[in-house]
Length: 342
Figure: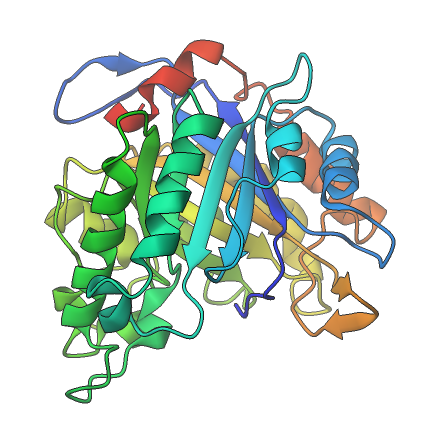
């Protein structure tokens, strides 16, 4: 999924109903799974805050986590507007930021080229947030790998980049970052000889994530196939991550059901079985929906897939029922448990 270079929001609501336990503790987890959305502006006049409110109205419920995408070394985050959204009166949100460098290779960042910015960012984040928030770095990083020696974008370069940024952020004594390693998660990238070399180590990774979509109902007819898509010798991302990193909570940082003539006959059944399917994946702790019908920015239309839940009344009814099926709840105590995997 191509990302625009402007920030937008993702929102998450807490899910309950499944008596899940973390394998490392065996303790029943009342917070269960996070469920959410990347809510982009749907018209030229709409602000991110308005997009959030519209999604909440369409979903029929308030959200709890707000997700922003950040690019480059010019602006610190959260911005005043982002901070205001995350601290709205009576409805505070858990921020989820994704940052990607601009104009620098991973190797350059790892070697300190962005340190002036990163240390200012670490201080700013430490001053802004007194509670845990999610932070991912260069989401879908497999797409950016260049294995050529000296490219600055090898798997080893990524590991060093990721570790360096995390250490700088954590150097602030007030940091509250919960670090997410956000893969694309597809079999295409898993087949690359450098794939297994990307993980930077458990000391700098709190959560692990993938992005996955239902564009072809033959391949992903239900939530179970969306969460884990085997291909040949590839067991699927969920199964691979559960085997390789059994103590790391998993997240679907982006997911969506495309609105098309191909998928239309399957949408109702997909959502009707989705909650039951989730029970098959106890290591999955969060889902963040990608809600778009096209992003309008400065008069420009970004050509992306249509996954908007208000595309038509049938899609909205199916999604709304899924989002309000009795499994979902909000618990303010869950925020303090993010770093421990909920």
